[in-house]
Each structure stands twice: as structure tokens, then as C-alpha cells.
Length: 592
Image (cartoon, rainbow, N blue to C red; front, side, top):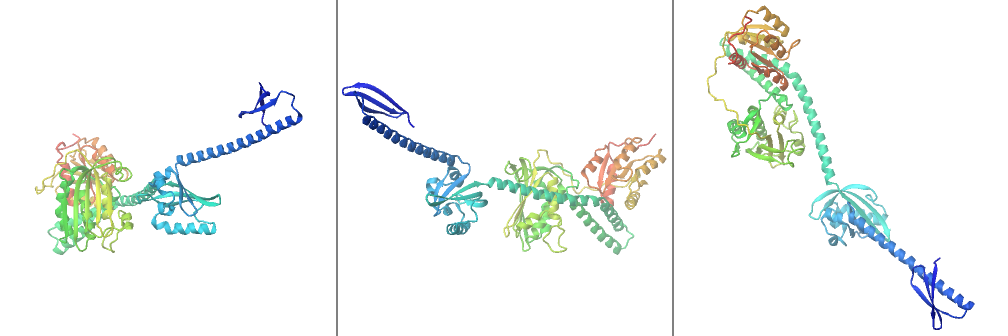
């Protein structure tokens, strides 16, 4: 109940009374000077009650209006500040509300889309029939497959680009009319992150597959290379034997070539698994490409045009020239197979700068200067499914007997082992571009060895200690050395070699030829043990293993060199002569 307040002042015919209800306006009433009658008091009381009721009704209406106004203000603020898009449509599908987040996401001004069909503005063309059918079904049945749940769908921007959104639609009725409010969130960044995670998972699986096959290849390489050393070595001896008839020499040549082919396959297996040793030296890609061009033209034939587009400035990288040649050969042969009716292969080099958008996850390379080697063909292109597997070992689209499936796998392994990356761009019927990125270097290119120089003599008369646990390889090595005039001491393992050295303590020992991996004692340990008595003894290590750390352990020793199995007798004889001719080695080494 409202409180009443009164002020009274003298007036001509009585008293002037002012009445106030709470904080409302004063109401003037003329009160007679004489004592009021009961009727006058009741009349005055009725008047006051009427005023109080009127004021209370007005106050209630003002409060409701104020609450409604505040609610509208809050709602407008929520719509304006919401991070998600909020779009409301009426029962005819016309947009009646389009918040600022929707303006920013879709690229439409609210004033330009209010009253337009939501399907026309926000739904891609391919999805509009399904949108219209679902809308009509809800109006007819009250049920809709996408209402009151979160789904992922494709939306349309003002510039015509489509993008993924998370969508939730809520229907409701106001004033007997149906409305639909859609809450949308751009999930392009999330989808990109999910794709990056998926790509990383695929890359990890691919790496694990390569690692598994690489371990298999590395595991059999030692024994297999020992066998190939024997096969290739004895075949070459038969070919050089003047007493062998032509048929025997020809047959031995075929066996040797088959053995060399097997050795090449082993190297390719080790290359893609990144276990093959590589001599990374500064070189100019332009020069390697130019020097390989003649061989490439011979390989691809006359129906295919080879074009070189070399950078005007040197493209210096640290790589193995022989392996880069192998990359070019494999890519050229692969391109040739994609152009059975002829075409064009372009080999291009240039320097480039990798920014953050190209480095990192995109190419798995650091930012900075790179040399790029491109091989472009006009062939049939590569199917996306094939492109996803093209670098896997033994994956091939060729018929049985027409390919090993190791060509591109070898390219991938060589590039990755050279700290580079490879990128493929191809569409069916549009040809293929393979780009190889290698980190640039400022180191000058290594000097080239002049070709055509006469080979130095490999003969000698020095004493050589041969230590090899594989009997057939040891027999071959002894036969080659004795054929060159050397005196040979042989042992089956390290302890036997040390015992043999003690029995020849007063004899000169000019060179140790030893396998790297042997039972009881490995090659480096044996070399150190012998050098305890013969400090300047040079060592030639040999191994069928291709582990880079193993090779480094050998070559880190002073006056030591390394020869990878399998090797031909002539190659072995040259390596022995070079080790003996080491300029820093004294002419002889004995206990005296």
C-alpha cells in the first residue's frame, strides 16, 4: 500500500492541502476551515484511493516496459558480441536476423540479406535441393533431420567460395509464427589441423614401413654383399683369364652383369631406407645436370625431346654427385615410360627461398635458401591413388617383369638422405612435375677429377694381412692380391690375426685389410690392437654393411680407408694400392 503525505497552508475559503503518494506528484485539494463532515472525509478517502490505484497501475506498466526494453538491449548485445554466426529465418525461409559475426564470416552485410532466402544466400548450389526438401518436410510434419543437433556441413561465402561449418538449428514459435535460428561456426582451421594430423599419421605410417623394409635390407645386406663379392669377383677373373675359351668368358660376363644388377638392387634398397653411405660434398647442380644430359638422351631415346633450363647462377648444394645422377636417371626413365608415343622432358634448376608457408610441415625443411631441381614431362600424368603410393618400395603400375618398383623409392631415399624434400604435381593427361629441394650452401664446389688419365699400376710386393670371417671372400681377396704380386697373410678373425702377427713379429707388415664386422673382435678394435706394436700401420676396412656410423668409425681412424662390398677385383686392387701409397706412411713398419 502506498504511503500518504500531506502539507496544509491557509487559504481564502479554508486550507490548501497538498497530498503526495510516495514520490509521485503532489495533488492539490481545498479543505474547508470548518470541521469536515463524515461524507467529506469519505469522499476525500475515495479520491486518494483512486489516485493510488492509478499511480500503482502506471508504475507496473512502466516496470514492464523497462524490463522489456532491457531484455531487447541485452539480446541485441548478445547478438552483436557473439563469436558464432547467428542467422534467423522465418517460416518462409527468409532471413530476419544476421549478426555481425555472420557478416564477417560470410561476407554479406546484414542490410543486403534481410528478407532474402537463406538457401539462396548461404547454401551452396549442390546442396540447395536437399535444403529446400528438408525445410518443406519440417513445415509439413514438424520433423527435420538436421534440427536440434550439431552437424558439419558446407556453406557458401559471398565471393562464391565454399567452406566447412558446424551447424545447429533450433526451431521455435513466437506470436503464432515459426522461426528458425541457425548457429554456425567456421571450422576451416579445425579441418586444416585435422588434415595435418591425418597427413602426419600417414607420413608416420609410411616412415615406419620404410624403416621396416630398411631394417630388412640392412640385415641381409652384409651376407648378400659377401656373396655378390665372390660371384662378381670370380666372374671378372674368368673374363680376364686368357686361357679361358670365348664361351667361358662370355658366360662369366653374363653372370658378372647379373651380379652387378643384384648389387644395384641392394644399393637401391639401402638408398630408399637411407642406409647407403653417401659422400656429401659441395657441388653445382647445374654442372651435374649438364654432365648427365648425354646419358639421359641415350636412355630416353629419340622420340623424346630433352630440354635443359639451367639457372644462370650456380646452384650449390652438399650432395653425392653419383646419387644425384641416379636421381636424374630414375626420374628420366620414369618419365619416358609415361610417354610411350614420345614427348618432352624438361630438367630445370634454380635457386629459391623457402618461407614459412613452404617450409615446416609442407616440405619438412627449414626456412632459407634452397636449390630446386625440377623434372617435368608431358606424359599421361599420375592418378591420385597412385600418387599416394608412388614412393613406396616395390609399388609399381608396370607389368610383371617390367619394373622393380624401386626407382622412385630410391629417389625418395636419396633426396631425404641429402637433407632434401621432394614434391609432386600431376594431373591425369597433364603431365607430371617432380620438384626436389636441397639446402643451398656457400661452400665452393669440389674440384673435378680429370678423366682420361692413365690408371696407375696396382701391382706390388708388400706384405698384407687379410682378416675376413667369410671363407669365400677371403679366398678371393688372397687370390687377387697374390695375382698382383703381394705377399699375403690371412686370418679368419681378430684373435687369430693377433696370434699370426706375433709369429711374424720381426717381419715387415705394410697393410691391414680387414672386414669391419666379425665374431669375437671387430675391425677397428683389431686395428687399434695391432697399432699398439705397429703404430703407423695403414688399414683398409671393407664391409657388406652400409651403416653410416660404422663407416665413420672406420674412417675416423688415422691412415685408414674404407671399401664397400660388393667390389670388383680391379676396384679392390686399386684401393689396396692407394692405401699402400699413403704419403704420410713410412715405407716399412716393424718391431725393430
